[in-house]
Image 1: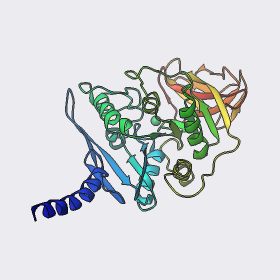
Image 2: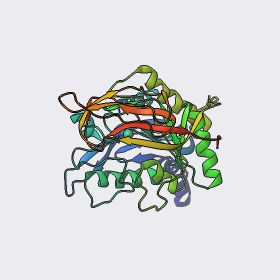
Image 3: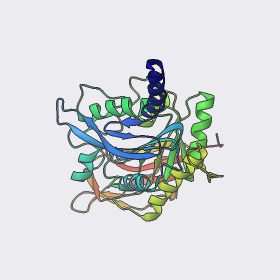
Length: 350
Ligand SMILES: [Zn+2]
């Protein structure tokens, strides 16, 4: 009898173990197969305050790869944040093969206080300090936790950005080839499946795993195919921009076989091989002459800068012939501010 009882116990124990092993947990979000769960990544207090980063795990009914979708490093790039909110609602675990980790808003302080570009707690960009430091300031501690809990545990990653409060931006994606053929093939498939029609080839990036700076590069250096996508501008939440990011994500998930159905890849994107930033020499009032998405020839005037009593103090010109990826959206200019970001089309597609 004793043998029979323990055999019976083992029979019950095996499926129980299999079930508990396939639970997927990120921070306090824990989802069994076929479930969606929300929670937080708790960044402990250190030299400055603690913070909680919201996270959702969609654990598909069928096992497979892990995709991380991360937005809101810049908390006022609203379209990217709203797109992830839409995906949190839209993704049905019954349809998903594998697991999706969604982080809609890393930089809550930026969002709440309406501060562009940085985390107002430590004045650092939350996409420049990866892989982070356990004993650093809040941005570094958050980056450290995201590297450990999300980057290290995903197979693919998409980082979402857009034009910030002061940036009038046309949509585009970044593709960062690594020289590792298979990884680059998959990341290129991802960026084409996403469908944005302008793609920046981002070749010169840090390769030291201890100093990767950017989130997507942190994943990329660790062997995980990853891309960056950007849409939205200057505080607006245009449904067309949100749709670009939502539909692009679903198409990429189909390409990666996390969702059933066919992707809708872009067939003829404009590949961009070089970025040229035009920076302000000093403070002043900005009067633009170009719009996002327009084409400029080398030498073309981009706009006028006056002092505070109307005297023209500068007329910045395009140093290259290029596409205006984004242009300063507001009259305020400080020394060193980005007046425009110009993209030079590649001589040939990669
Ligand atoms: Zn950003």
